[in-house]
Amino acid sequence: MTDGVSSRDDKVEAGRNEDLPVVPAQFVYPFVIVTTLFALWGFANDITNPLVRAFKEIFLISNAQSSLVQWAFYGGYATMAIPAALLIRKVSYKSGILIGLLLYAIGALLTIPASLMMNFNIFLVGFYVLTFGLAFLETTANPYILSMGPSQTATQRLNLAQAFNPIGSLTGMLVASLFILPGLKVSEFREAQLNAHPEYATMLPSQVDGLITESMQQQALADPEAQQAMVAHDLDVVKTPYVVIAVVVLLMLVVVAVAKLPDTGNEEDDIDLKTLVKRLFTNWHYVGGVIAQAFYVGAQIMCWTFIIHYGMTLVGLSASEAQNYNIVAMVIFLASRFICTFILKFLSPGLLLGILAVGGGLLTAGAIFVQGLPGLYCLIGVSACMSLMFPTIYGIALSGLSPNDAKLGSAGLIFAIVGGAFLPRYQGAIIDGEGMTIAGHALESVRVSFFLPLVCFVVIAIFGFTVYLFSGSGKQPKSNPIAPENAS
Image (cartoon, rainbow, N blue to C red):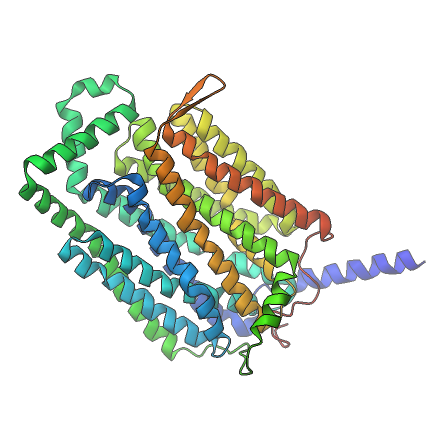
């Protein structure tokens, strides 16, 4: 008798959850405004990735040195995430957004003096400051979206907002593919070398890549004035889209400043950091989520940054051709995010996360061991598996936290983006090294470097399946302290 009553209650509860809106009517306008920010930081992320390879050739530096672009970019997240969260606890979400947009614009505009002075380090400073702004935006926008409605639809709501992030990413990739990479003089030099040496067609792409790099270095020594002119031209090409996006961001700042955005909770009391940190770090969902997020971001940045190296070194593509495959990967990522958001209605977040991580690991193994274009296709396919990982890990980690705890908790998850600073740096160093032979298969250094994202997917799979197995179904809690009391 008791079991029958319990079963009926569960069905009633399930029915109520299905009827709950993902975004309640009173939050539609602010939801649209804040969701626009997801596209803005997606643009910044993915217009910057191709610069790792571009700066390597413009400044004639190593892969490890050029990967400092990602070190600065994602290091800015790590530096500012927690300070941003502490400030946001004292002010409104709107104030956090305004600060973030201002810093974003300042960082983008620093590419102007960096280009004029032809200084790689100033570019790094600009990316560092720009991501101060992105840290504010992400630390603010993610919990703000979670708070805009009932708890039962919190993960769906965040996934819906995050689905627009790849639209910005795709735009950034298209700008890089259509305007930056083809417009570089170093790309013209590489094409001229291929035309001048027909024997390159009979050599391995990795050998050809090394010979062209040597030719660039010799050209720089033989004619330094021509080299300086080429660098000045190419850095001007790189600068232009950052100046344009700075203007767009400043216009968005004006829109947000005049918009009426609801304040879903801020805290004016003194923060007992010791107690707060203890609450967060005794929550295994949260701790595991931070760790999984660090490995996920590292895997994502490695797969997208070095797909150009993979295509150029192992398949023999030009930089713009390799970037086009990156665009295909982003289209797959975007489509998969909408598909997986729908699948979340039927599978628990933890289970879906684990399944996607296993798929990502298998495809990464394919990129390592499969030769030619099929290996590149495996690397592209990884994006389908990565599509839902960030927001799903985010939602799992913050489930059960109060609105104010979620603000600092969000900072920990944004701090985890530091995985995108450390891991690509290690991958670049591996690419600069020698290859290895495994089970009789000779692997180039670029292939070997993809063992790093493979390990990342193993960690994510462990987290996802652990959540599923030890948290019931792994679904959202019936009550969500992240959401305001009147959200439903």
